[in-house]
Length: 165
Image 1 (tube, rainbow, N blue to C red):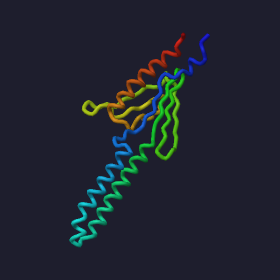
Image 2 (image 1 turned 90 degrees about the vertical axis):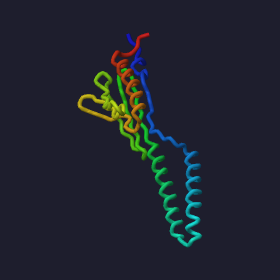
Image 3 (image 1 turned 180 degrees about the vertical axis):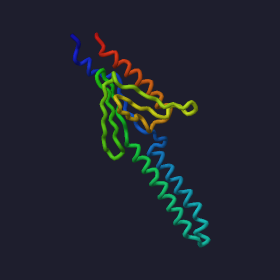
Image 4 (image 1 turned 45 degrees about the vertical axis):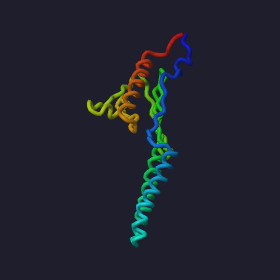
């Protein structure tokens, strides 16, 4: 008789998050440097009497700040992928906190890669019984390729069934 906990054993688990190359601390430094550059470049215009230039530089700073703020807000999105011998689950959580979940039986799932020779893996889809769900859409080609290797390995292991010890 097989062990029931073997069916719940986690084969693969990953939390996928969008990459941000600039940490919040480094963003503060960049913002300070940007503000200083705008201030010193608008100073001659203010001295010459063209003070509206300073207002437009302030607008540049505000746009710069809000663009980065929106980028960091989008970085709160993530995806959870989990594979057990009986289930592949995918949960996508948006930046606003909205959660969508998909559950598949691993024996019927195939991972489709849309790969470009020049640019690498462009898209990963989980396909099962007519349903298609994109996974890791916000990752770069190399990260998608790594995920595809790990997920393919996990799906193959799940198809073999639970381990007997």
